[in-house]
Amino acid sequence: MIKSLRLPWLKSFKRIFSTDAGTWKNYLTHLLKESGGLLLFSCNYDVKDLSINSQFYMALLLWWSKFRDDFATKKDWHVIIWNNQAIKINNKPVFYRKYYSSGIQTVDDLRFDLSNTRSLLRV
Image (cartoon, rainbow, N blue to C red; front, side, top):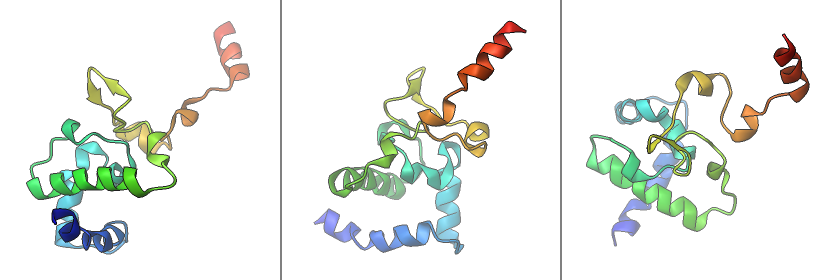
């Protein structure tokens, strides 16, 4: 019954990622600021690792994590390194805004050109 009441929030997910602003969206973005903002919806997060001061949004994030795992055919969030429940430092999820802003999202983005690395090592 609770899940069926949350289904209308699927429409809100479309609004969450739109460019339109709103008080509720600003509040959500503020709550998620330390975790990368709305990027969190694209991550493989574990709700237990989040510290958000809203029971409503915590429940929504929990529901979203279960929903996407059950119904998505493509599971792209597993390769994003930020807020990934399988990638932790000191038992906490990782999000580095500076690296994310530089375009680093996946492990592939961290690959180095070995020919460049060898020349750097010679110096």
